[in-house]
Length: 138
Length: 306
Image (cartoon, rainbow over all chains, first blue to last red; front, side):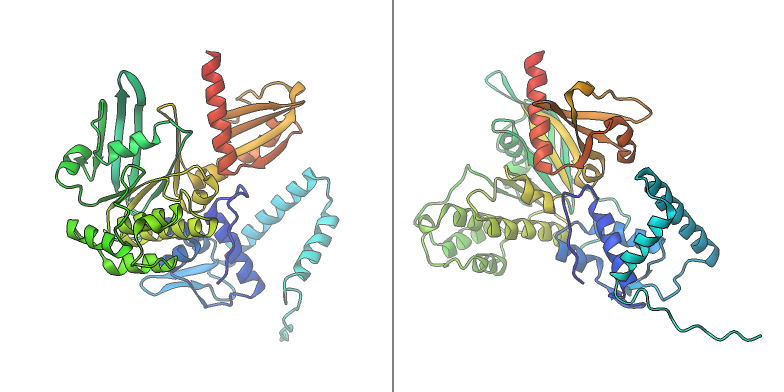
């Protein structure tokens, strides 16, 4: 797994790892159930303290992106994640509210934001392809 | 080898408490509290004559403190040094081997003094393609540095004290060296203290930065914390000074006027709240080098003013 760290971005390293892994999971580069590098290997690759990797993995686990299986390793969560549906809905709503608020600060209305979201999603391979709809039995 | 369980706090290997040292009545180090834990890489920065080398010499037990204590795994540095200094390895400018000894011969010499891995040392020299048979004096300044670092690492110390280890190394070798120090701390649960003038290198691998100025420790913080909490604000001078308050706890680390704009370096646990304070100014994250220059210059102006 290739990660690039920016030491001058004002973003702590652990958070850069969290964001990079989230992005790779969202873009499909890291498919469900795939194993992430161990803490030691990751710390070695990035030349950072293992504690920083631990912190990133713990946050990713908390966010439901990865699962840490004791003695086995760290794995990308399976498709619909380990987050309960209600919590998931609330998290997404929270994210949307924050985006709207930040957007408003920059003078953007919801319509503009939605356009930008669509545009950005097109840059992620496969993100805009919908899964075939399941037939609903009546 | 790492006893890493994710949550366990690391133990302090090196611990200095209220450490002081005078040289003929002049204070070189004045009440420094600094520690280095197992698995930790600490970058020690400071202007020339700030007290960095004095600190390292005290930690090696080469000189006696004028006050306070410095200990390694609970044992006073002077006592440990008198017993042979096992577990502590240092690279400094004080010692240079005889010029006629070959790189290989230096390994033999080191091996006769205590635990030493020829395999680690040999591989280390191979990384820069250094001939084991060449006399030490024939190597360049940077290559000599590299050899001394290899000698230190191959003794598998608990504590590595490196005074300007990258001095004279080219940028790619510097990177190799710092990555090796990081890996060494990770794999052996060792503590590494390294002084340097080139902040950009050490910023990539260090866990903590300590800035010493005129014998005082003025910054001691985790780099992850600084990345999150330190910002530079640029705004017109007419806006006046930035005043702490406004429900936003902050510490002013530095200030400089450049023509019609003021540059401020601030530390706050809530950088998101800074925008209201900046008053339309530009807020930017700070590279370690800029922070270092800002705090040391700010301190010297404050002291000159008083």
